[in-house]
Length: 402
Image 1 (spheres, rainbow, N blue to C red):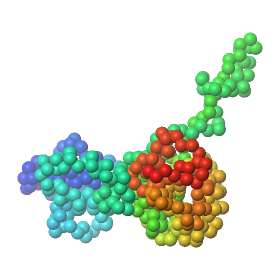
Image 2 (image 1 turned 45 degrees about the horizontal axis):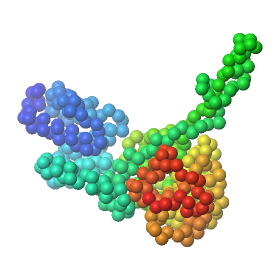
Image 3 (image 1 turned 60 degrees about the vertical axis):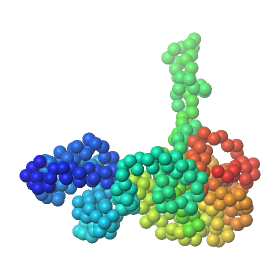
């Protein structure tokens, strides 16, 4: 250790660095034992006499991507300037200072709520993990999103992100040369025969060229759909990270395109940006007007590849379905498959009594519930092709409750 670092006992400094690394790991940064060793060597090299030297030494070890810097800065500020914030003591409230930004939701939940569990003996913690993990997972599978607590909802959102399906490529209209293709390319075959003569004609085969799947998500963020929409946006974010052609729109009283926001790799930053962009969260619902705006302004841009459309809404329209029949029919004719995800379908005695529901039902290919983890898993199976479903012959043909 340098002379400046010798002021703090080496053993105590190692304990602080290990605790800091655990805090970063809870926030979501990839912290390995090797990085912890490198952090100790870096601090030993620069010392701890200057705060900026300590910051950049640890920053160079733990931060690998630009999107990690915000979380690192907040954890560094809390840990090295107000340790009470991590211990549930006097530092519970985020300190104010120059350059300070409000705590992100991930940092607040990971650091300000975890210490109570961290102070428990290690033996008790491992016993709880071994005994309760399976029952918690089974309980969450069938529990309604609206009935979940904050911690359970966070677990459900993490589970939803892991359910993004692997969708097979779609056969396109164009062809490409392939030695085992089902069709013969006459033009290339005749051109090849000119080189070999009329006695031997080599057959040039071709097959359809696959194209990546495309999706359009239309998500209702009105007051009655708020909880379900927030969870489903985690699914939309995972889909956006996996596939290049995913367009996501939020609507309540107006339509908002949040596709660019969801391309951010960090889910918290992506959903925060989408929330700031959509000004009508938990408001009324004008489904017909919003679909009209989509068909008028966005259909030619995002529907050119004939995507699969996921309509997430309860169908309760403030304007009693005015103009909705015409707009949903146009949307259905423009897409490959229209899947309507309605949390009201979880009720056994559900009846399409609302005018908006009656207007949408005749024009959907799949009518499914989206109220718990099992329903999200069923949707993922449909999208991946694991569950082969026939095209519906009636409005409730594929509306089996999940």
